[in-house]
Image 1 (cartoon, rainbow, N blue to C red):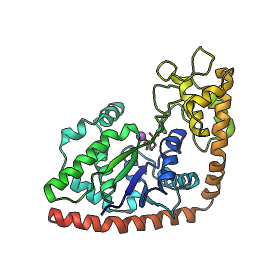
Image 2: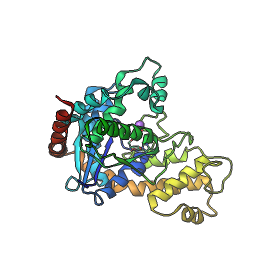
Image 3: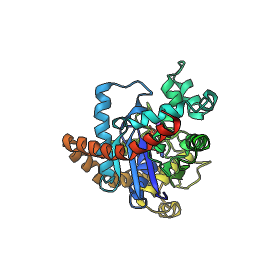
Image 4: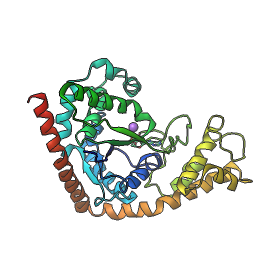
Length: 328
Ligand code: ADP
Ligand code: NA
């Protein structure tokens, strides 16, 4: 069938931040109206690749659900669900694991980075999670996957696995395409050579969607810039200031040129306040919606239950077919 089907996932660990919002969630909201079937998964199984506190994890799943709903993910338009509630993901993951060679996974950039960062031999889940990602996508015969630049290599693995399966068992999976989000990486406020990330130990580096206005002002005030006080956009030479300009443009919907033009005569110290205020204004309605949703735990659980049931309805027949094709 020529159905256009979108799949994307987000880990529930940690609070949604400005990078996630501008790089993923905001475009997810738009895709809801552009594709036939849209699935967004809270990929809790992926969170288990690093140690988790069970009580915290359980709460984080509901918090992430609240955050996504508050950003505009609409359960009437898309299927919002919890990955672990649909066992087809792990079933397909095993079948695909049996079709991929060890060096293919060992050569993935993220494995190299993460396994050295962890200074240990490395948990198997950290090595094989890109196969689980492939299963997440292929369990729905997804055709389009919104991803950040950092996921391009993993998408190639998904495409290879789909093609490999089709070659062996006959045409079955569509080869999914990436939808690259227009937003380049939002950088860390403290080290503009790194991306803004949930897991950054420097608490000042990441602006969370639930931060208070005071926290946001303070984080931007301490953002790393340089010794030139003029506001210009030059990511190669002035990464810190350019990151502020990119954030400013993204949250206001203005172009980078327009933002720079309007900032003529403003020095970077004051400009930090301007950008902070724009972010506060953008997040204010989302933040209050999150607070409202978090008071209704039953509703959040119901959203995930209903979404997961819908997801299972789509994945079940696909996995039945896969099993038949592989002879089990
Ligand atoms: P994190 O790296 O902070 O843990 P995730 O890996 O859960 O975030 O990513 C969820 C989504 O957000 C992905 O689509 C990812 O590409 C996007 N994303 C994460 N960090 C950034 C960033 N700094 N800038 C833009 N997009 C980002
Ligand atoms: Na990540």
